[in-house]
Image 1 (tube, helix red, strand yellow):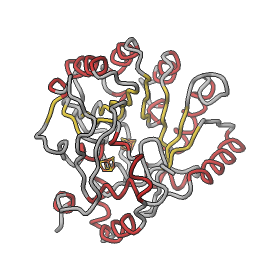
Image 2 (image 1 turned 90 degrees about the vertical axis):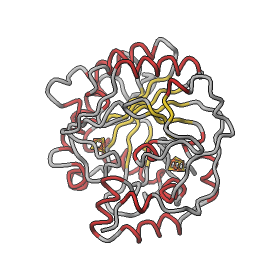
Image 3 (image 1 turned 120 degrees about the vertical axis):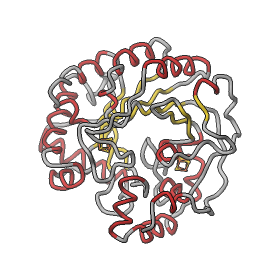
Image 4 (image 1 turned 30 degrees about the horizontal axis):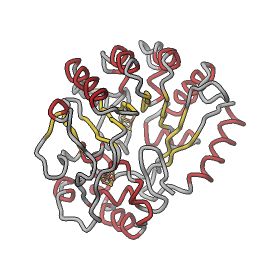
Length: 319
Ligand code: SF4
Ligand code: SF4
């Protein structure tokens, strides 16, 4: 059977890309997660044991200062399940960097994690919370039974702490990704639907909705291969290529770090173990004084997932 690695290693006709100024450090604190979603491009779940250690986090703190990083974007898994999460965020805040937590909101409802929401609010962390639909059936199909109700309860807690409320300074952004192998709908239209439905039904408010295309890699890629839909989905991404998205793809201004401290051009390349272009595996500690500007970016066919239709990045649609 064709494996996802074989597909990802194929030569690509995706256009050449190079970096701009580096402004964002995205860190994967580990693959441990309290749930296991079907679309997960990380293969995260409750049985994963890979977690970033403190020494790697300390190196990251040095990197933030050395490279004048503006945004620290932590992800996982559920990043809050890393035992050093709080200590790391507190130390990072001292550097003046903007803190972002890619949060699966159900962690807030998990026993033993009651501290998560108040901690994030106390430290002014921007929350980017995944909620792949505003209806319970679609969310539970993709993420597991009961996930929708837990997510709603968690978002209400965040709202009660000021998140998403005008003038609070506590930003709450939601992330949508399609359940089926299709492109996300218009971000603007869907945001209006989310606002109306979540507001009227549950009294939930938020700042922005980010629509993100599913990447045909890892668990989602395997699912497409298993169901025979991989080729069709790739064709869809390629046929919807839009050159105007190219300048905004996220790899131009961020680097992505894995739980061991190795650096990639983006989170997707990290999952494919594709090192930065022209490099072998590079560790954060070896890149303290590296000038990233104008460096080539390692590309593959999966990059069409970032440029299809309205475009897709960790901050949502690109146009
Ligand atoms: S998509 Fe997010 S919440 Fe779901 S398993 Fe992956 S890391 Fe966990
Ligand atoms: S997949 Fe990664 S390297 Fe490719 S365009 Fe998207 S962000 Fe850039």
